[in-house]
Image (cartoon, rainbow, N blue to C red; front, side, top):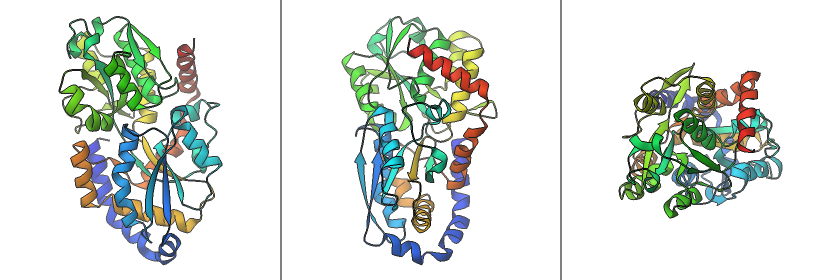
Length: 362
């Protein structure tokens, strides 16, 4: 499904969702009247995750019955898992503390020791898809210029990442492996802002980040000045087929880039694994969760507010001004379906993911 089709589905479903959600709003309005909701973001300020949730936070409170105040708080650590575990295990389930963070299907699938939360027990409120883009430091290229055509000729690049289970790191590593690029993977960077700073200082050469981070923090400065360039973006895969994103500007998708760079289509076990990661992670990235045990009236109010947010023209205009396009949020039921489908991932894919992650730890 393309980004444009996703937006069409969102808009076409709002009227119905609003009617159903608004059938009995009095208890919901009473629940949040005069209260404050804390959004817990699992990364430092300055990256795409933080920017995304700070972009809609001034608007969603106006749509949640009772019009609560929204406060965004950052809790960085373990690639977002610190915040996820905190909201799951320790946040009071009163609807006043929400996890606003990328969900982590890879860590959930491989049963990572760092992730103690069970996404199926959270109350999913909403979320959406975001393309990822692999950024390269121009000075690391053989010609020293922002030239994606010579990426395959570069040697001894340093790939800045967060942790081996991060989907950003996995698509970055797999794509470079497929292209035969010489690089060293260096995890441990806490977020997009730190990875970007490492590139700008020459400490790192490559990183993969969200397209919103690219639009908000790179396109009109570091890219325009020639310090960094976008090599390619990572598309969605639906039913095994690559689905390009028409909203991504002037950046080739990875499959197209690979064909131009090598003269053939991507193939082999790592391509199949990369497509699996695309399937698992590209349909839903940023998300909003309420803790397990949150009162039904609070969950209902939050979902009412989220549904109305999707049809708010002022929010759409604000997001477009900031990122160059609206945020690709999904209806709640569509995002929940992606979470529920995680249980159907075949064990061969899980084993391949574990093996690839283990390679990074050697």
